[in-house]
Image 1 (cartoon, rainbow over the protein chains, first blue to last red):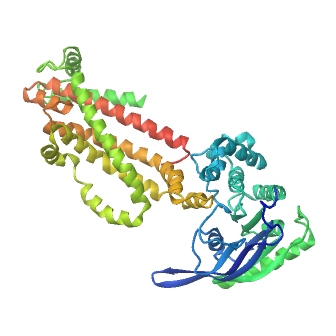
Image 2 (image 1 turned 90 degrees about the vertical axis):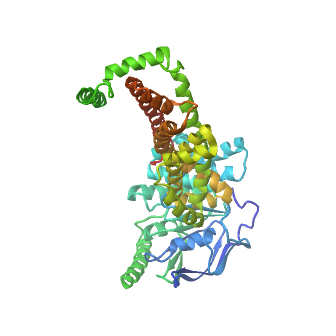
Image 3 (image 1 turned 180 degrees about the vertical axis):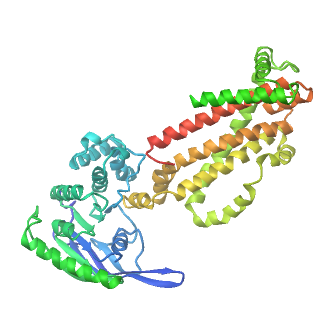
Length: 262
Length: 250
């Protein structure tokens, strides 16, 4: 699966001067000051920043779930002011519908798109296999472990073939061991789909392990502090010296910002 | 096991009280049992009507009131849960009406709607409030991420409503049904006591009391109790199995 008939090499997502100011009780709080970024097809870009730096706000702006107060987000020239199936989302708490089986959760987006039943079933089946849950297709959500739930959520977002998947700390609710397994699995899944991903995380380790580029954010009002290219081969070796040098550099920065905050 | 002990204790207490107070007005459990058997064997000792006529009449009114309450409260509750503005507009009015005992409306409804629809409206009021309160609560309890997840899959507002709002409020609705049926069942009997020459168990009881046949009164009370337990037990079971099957804790 490659480009769904679109340009494979050019800029896919264009974020230009994006800003968000919340107004509450007549007082303005500037969550995001100014973010501009281009993301290419098939890239995995992660955002990392000090606590409370508006990462989730940024993701919701791109998803079109909340309106920006400045700037624009475009995918292939289409403005993203409302949510659409071209931008899938994966949530930290999975956000699966508990009354639906695994299969039915994965089929949700296809139902919404009006895909006929037989095709729905077949497409969902493929993605359930992709995330390795074929034995659990008819299980209820509450019967699954956290890692399995998140795999369902990933399948649910991928099955509608979005241009980009927005992941909001998707492994944040999982224990460390499951988390590492999920990261490796995500790399596998992505290897077979060439999917563009915007990934938000608290974990520097996770960001370095997964990303093509890491966007380091400042504290509120949020801007981009620096963008780090990571051209290394995957799967990456967490014990490699360059991995740890980079990790330390980012951690030092985040720690400094967090201390200044408190 | 403890349930059985509890019931035996209740019967003993009843026996004790009837002996202590006045056996003519409070018949013993055994006397009531005899009256109950007679009632089902030969019917109402006064009119000769079958006891099933009364039961059918009460259940019919009850069911109609319930269906009406359900049909109004479910969609209205969804809308009020969905729209904060509408909710804030309507809820103060609800707060004023809610504490009024539904049977207080009985004379008004009977005069306006007659002996058949009047009691039904009393039942409606009794069931409506717990039902709509539960549905509104259910909607406000929806995980906002469920909505966001559905919207990012391309859902329109109406699709979000159908795929998330309606199913997720069903366990809460059933919880409201459970409470509502209990209250509604109390309402039907009291409304009939008040105003129903067309029949019903409430009417039967007040008739028996008027001629001073107290075992008949108590037989009627026992029937009402048993039907109440069946109704509430059934909806309790439904609520529990449904919530469990839907993976929700409502």
